[in-house]
Image (tube, rainbow, N blue to C red):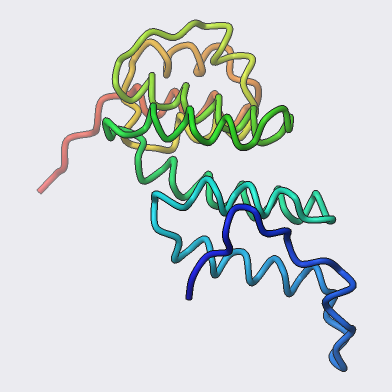
Length: 174
């Protein structure tokens, strides 16, 4: 299965006549986009993302792109290719607020994972998703970030999880 060329337009709602099962056209396009993204070669990913983002149903298109962003960012988090991928992806997603924020937060997660510079304001001002991810992902071991979230995390769940991560493990009896 090949990805559409970058100059192609996304499928139009009119191109998808109603089916007898009454599944909305955008649901079928979303499933198709996920299938294409799952198999897209890395060199063609940005072009496919651009095609998807031209879909008439912006929320569906952004959901499909976000899923790819999540998968690829998690895969590349500590990889040397992350910065180039993030720059390319940022150029494709442009000024779409949710996607831009999520990409910035993945970049901040990378900074925490690799002990690169970050600020308390970035961490405390980030989304609930970001703060939960910091305290749940074992790749993030920064005592400074965990202490900050134990003290100033937005939710009790985040504060408690960060506090647990900071405690030394109990010795096993036996």
